[in-house]
View 1 (cartoon, rainbow, N blue to C red):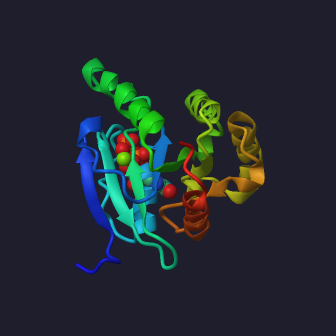
View 2 (view 1 turned 135 degrees about the vertical axis):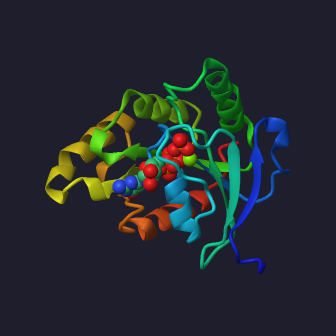
Length: 201
Ligand SMILES: Nc1nc2c(ncn2[C@@H]2O[C@H](COP(=O)(O)OP(=O)(O)OP(=O)(O)O)[C@@H](O)[C@H]2O)c(=O)[nH]1
Ligand SMILES: [Mg+2]
């Protein structure tokens, strides 16, 4: 495999399983089933991150090395989704320390992509996540997923709700569809910009 191939680096069920900090990292946060893993696959150009119709597919921190056409490789970190309503408590209880520990302590973290389903505008969890990141000075990019499900004429109000709820300017929110590929280029560009910025720690 050549060095430009995307590589799944590791799946981590505990912070101790993380590889030694090396490349800049960007984490993907969002409700379960919102399309985080599908977005990562679109960036990688390969279906490496497992996706599923059933919420709660990603339960560990999964790291993938993305080598953009230009620029340094970036490690994409697929986080377990928030809000696994149907999962047992013992599984849900693991989310908090694992994800919060990763986001608060990882020295190579450059920023977080908050993935929100465009059809829903801004959920309470999206609002809380954006606020939590802001309080910790962790830069965030908001990507509105499943854009193929929303006719263009209906998008403005939903995007405004997402902008109001997350505090991210409406024009900075990227509309994305894993089905049509809409927004994939813009997402890649935004991630590279995020990765170039200094680490919040
Ligand atoms: N129509 C449409 N469906 C999508 C899109 N992105 C993801 N999906 C579908 O939504 C479901 C969930 O996608 P995933 O990428 O697994 O979502 P996730 O956020 O990683 O979910 P968890 O790992 O459970 O947190 C799958 O059935 C996908 O095919 C999209 O842009 N458009
Ligand atoms: Mg997933």
